[in-house]
Amino acid sequence: MASEYLKWKYKDVQPDQPVELTKKQRRRNWWHYHKWHVILGAAAVCILGSLVWQTVTQVRPDYQIAYAASVPLSEEEAAAWEERFLALGVDCNGDGKIVVQIHQYLTLPDSEQAMYNYASNVKLMADLDACESCFFLLEDPEGFQEGYEVLREDWFPVDNGLYLARRTFWEERLPKNLEDCDRLWGRLIKEMA
Image (cartoon, rainbow, N blue to C red; front, side, top):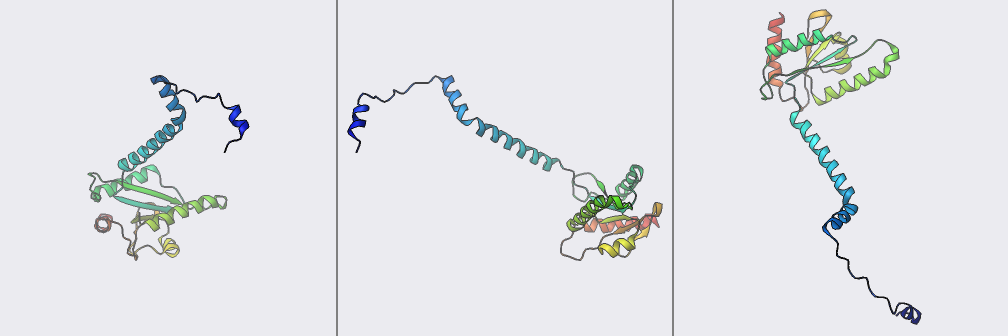
């Protein structure tokens, strides 16, 4: 129940008459209250579109080679290894082209590079955990096998004091192209012999 004073004070007050807005005023009013929703929605659509585009256009390699050594592989040597694998390999993922990718995991002998060595080791462990690389180019296969225990015992020497090795899998997680990698290994052995 309102007090008598309030009744007396507001006795002549009439509600405001609704104002009819023009189309331009209605658009401005709507934009004033919804501009951040539109901006954030547009940003979300752009980010989602970018992610979809990257996923659709991403090139998936048929063969991946892990290079673990103390000296980086030169561009010419990397290209020669890629050409060798391209010549002997097949299209494993059915995209119409053979793609070979070399990942370099360097362990530098300088003690000041400990953080770099640690980061390189973490990347190598992620590669091993994801079962990405089936082939390895190594300076010291015995040391690598002692540290990681992932190689089959049939590595063989190749150019520049390196050894070519392949990975063994003892878990149920196997790469999709394991049979193609085994066939490629047989072709590499015949070519290298």
